[in-house]
Every structure is written in C-alpha cells, then in structure tokens.
Length: 397
Image (cartoon, rainbow, N blue to C red; front, side):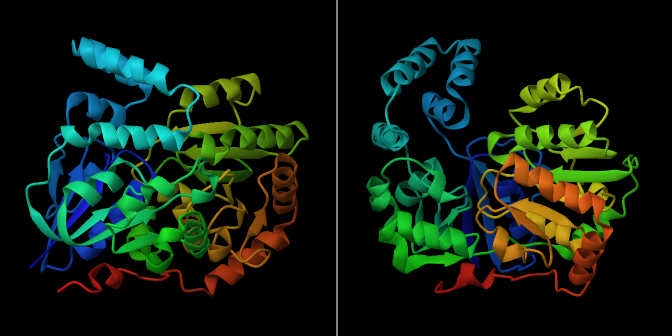
C-alpha cells in the first residue's frame, strides 16, 4: 500500500481547495492508497467533502509561526491578544515594522530561515509527499525540509508572472522536489521562465472536473434566479477576481436600460467592501451576493451568461464547469483561459478592461445568435477533459 501525504493550509472556500477535494475523491477510489491530509488548521467549508478514508492531521507549529502562516498581521495580533499570548502579539508587531517596505520575497526568505530551528519533522515516512498549496508558500518549505518521502511533488495553481521580487533563493527548496506541477500550459511556461532551475521537471496537471457529480448536484431544487438576463460569476470575493470592475460594468448596463441581474456565488475578505460598492452604485436590486454555496451548480444551471472578470488566475475551474452546462461565457484573458475557451467559438475572451467587459456583455445580451452559437458548439464537445492522475504515481515503486 502506497502512503501519500498532501499538505494545505486549511480547507476554506477557494479554487485550490475545491480542486484538491475533486482530486482526493478521484484517487481514493483506489484501495491500495493510504492518503493523509496535513493541515495548518483543521477548518474550512470543504472539510466535510474530503473522503472518509483520508486521514487528517494538523501540523504542530509554535504558536507565533501558526499565527504568521494563517492570519493577516492585524488578525494575528488580535488573535494573540485574545489568547493572552502577549509575547507573540509583540513579536508579530515588531516583525511588521521590521518588514515595512522590504521586498515580499526577502520577507519570506527571512521568515523561513528564522522558523527553521522552531520546527520538527513529520513523524511518518511516505512514498509520495505533495505540497498542494504550492508557489513557495510555507507548505513548499515544510514538505521540502521536514517531510520524509521517496518522491515529492509541488503545485503551482496561480499566475506566477504577477509575483514580485527575486525568487532565486527558493532554489534550495525546489531542488527537493521531483516534479513541479502547473495547472495550465501557460502557467508551466511562465514558471519555467520565472524559475529556470525547475525547467527540467515542470509539467502540467490539469484540474479534474467531475462531470457526472456536477450534473447530479445541479438537479437539486433551489430558489429560482430572477431577471430577464441572469449573469453569474462563481468565485472568491477577493481582489484578483475583479468584482469591483464587474459591478461598475453591470451598473452602467442597467443605467442604459438593459434588464440584467448579476449573481455572485462566493465569499471572501472583500465582502464588506463589495457590499458598500453595491450601495454606492445603488445596485442593491440588481447585484446579488449569494455567499458561499456548497452546491453552486444549481445556480449555474439557471444562468443565461457566465462571466469571469478576473484580474489573474492560474487555471479557472469554473470556466470548465460552465462549459458542462453549455453556457455562453465571457472571460478575461488570464493564464489558462485560452486552453479552455476558443475565442469567438466557445466563448468570448477579452482583456481585463472595464470598457471591453462592457462591450462584450452588451454584445452577448443583445445578440441571441452569439449565445446560441456558443451553446451549440459546446454541446458537441467532450467535457470530461484530461485526467492526469496517473502522473502522481509515475516513478513510485
């Protein structure tokens, strides 16, 4: 029986966490695998969707390291004070002052070196250890240096091109990994350019899309979405998703007399900020924040247009999910978008630009022939995509 370890921060709502759930549910059908999930905190909306056969462990970290890894600076200080950990609160405050104005990569490097003598190795030995959080995060460092495994993999889910600073210092950690998986071909190319020391071991591993399960969940009864033209986005309420710009576009369409309703499924740190923006735009009746939904597919089934206004992505799972329902799609041109959408054939790809978003939505709303053309093309496609699971076991005895 092969022992596999996956490491993540938590299982809170997010695309990376969702893709891990789908991967675990796929590989755990194999009874010859002994799978463990190592978390920094055993929390999150996706915890109950992890297969029962997966063992869950929490990484034992010194409290100040835990706070720095799982909380923002302000939240970390408040949490420490509430727990009576005054020294840890002071330490975080001092670090914040020390790191002000310093390059992000330099800060991360200093943290890794400072933590090293505080950490202990994972007790068990594994055949495969996987840093699924990836992209030079704490998990990349921990799996590289503190987990014993015959084979090690790390993931890059995000667009590495948008990261600032010199990442050359991470070579000593990436040297511990046998393969570096990227979720799209474009992300793989950008990773090889940005991290030339991984060029010979970088590979793609596309996010899995469980089509049959999604279609089954979509049948679940729910409150019907209202509106003449229902536009939907599924995603975390965070800066990279571009909702601030999308809301202004929807407001402009409504001001011009177009009867559209915009629904957003997701939760995140920008909730209050975006709610305030809706108020300032006076769009409370037209922009609807549906919050976290364990089953977003019942809403995806109902929408007229799927809209992805992201500033950047590594590989957007929801584009693939929208294709399953043969929805007309408008998406910005982030990493991986062109691997999922053929522009003007299965959807519309635009730059991240407010005017371009407005033009694309206006054209889609007013020209039913375009929507029909995209829908008919998608109906004739294989939506199951590529299954790269076999790559996890390559080279493992």
